[in-house]
Every structure is written in C-alpha cells, then in structure tokens.
Length: 76
Image (cartoon, rainbow, N blue to C red; front, top):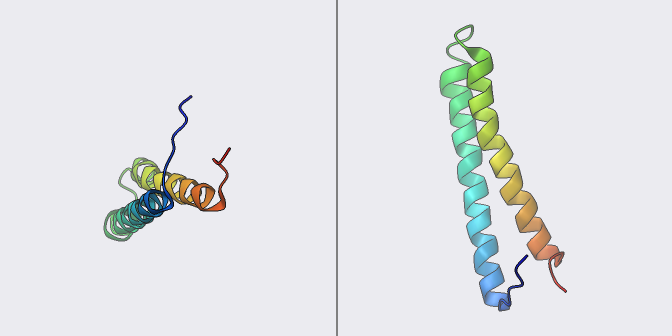
C-alpha cells in the first residue's frame, strides 16, 4: 500500500476529474442503452447489456471514490 500526501487543491482537482469520469461513463452507458439495446431488441441483448453494465459499474466506482475522498475516508 502507498501513502500519499496531497494538498487540498490536489484533492479537489482529483475529485473534479473523478466527477468528469463518472459523468462520461454514465453518458456512454446511456448512449449504448438508448441507441443500441433499445433499438436492437432480440439481437444479443444480454451481451449488449453486459457491455453497457461495464460503463455503469465504472461510473459507480468513480462516484464512490469521489465520495470517499470528499469524506476523508482515506485520511490517516
């Protein structure tokens, strides 16, 4: 495990980047659902949902990490 020392400004910058990543992954997920899965029902729907779920899961990971940073859960 690594221990990092970051300034408040660096933490804020990381939180902003995580928020942007979360938003982008959410947008990709929504785009896949709206333009592929809902349009092409019956054609590998399970596989398409699996690919879309990856982006949703990643957005959740970024959101959780962002929340943990903001709440100081990594502070010693």
